[in-house]
Length: 339
Image 1 (cartoon, rainbow, N blue to C red):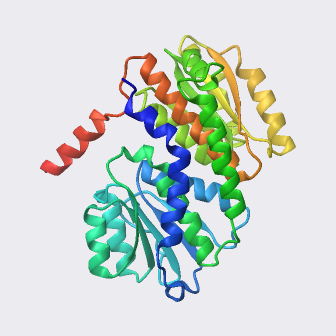
Image 2: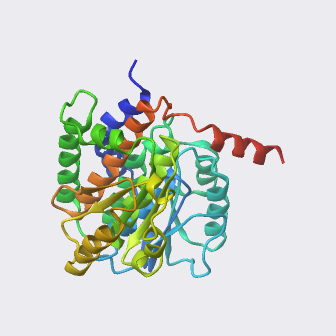
Image 3: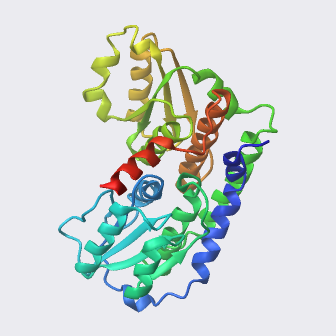
């Protein structure tokens, strides 16, 4: 029987398309959202991952700052000129519900993205706009449902230009990648990579503009394959962490190094990656470069996110781990609820 997670991954391009359609249909009163000076995305775990991607995607073009807020309280600057996306797939994430109340008390402009739960109840009571998405999946498998509504809303509110063409290209690219990565595909980079890294700790290095992808790789390995993974960004790790790995030991040999790459890297970053690899390659178990595909930045970021979904799921399956349940996360939540 095919693991449920593989089904979710095969449906991902359709999910992205659905998310756009759901959001386009939602009747929003644009006048409620005039004079926005900054955007804050509130969420935890899989529900915050879309916020990271939004920030990576728009930071070179949006004229207002976009911040991701993981936690119970919002920064002091949040007020009536702040658009706050409150994202909780379940609608019951305690940190996010707390941030929602904080946003409300500061008269921020709030839009929620959720499948229901307490968040939906509160929004209905408080007259807050909700983009309601389909429930019943693991939050990390709902990346498209949580990300694309934000882009579509920012478009509709006139905070960014039209993204229709980029979204179309992104979904087409994801469909193409699905053909390459799905279980029936023979020459399969996702399967090959999972076999290569099996039994190792993972070290993910990426240029700063791919930060969202690096975080997602780490978290997908943690949750899907239950494997130890760390990430760092270039150029920053050239100023500290490189010291550690360069020593070379039995410990460093347990790590497999994955570089996330992109066609739009600047020349100095390219050189830094080449030199960093040359210094580290004999000190770790192996090195693999994974390059984004697609034309637009939106498409390229999604190509790397999507690959991490497949690789971490295949790694789980070849390690006899079920990617769906997260028993430790559940245990922690249970203990918190008993206090």
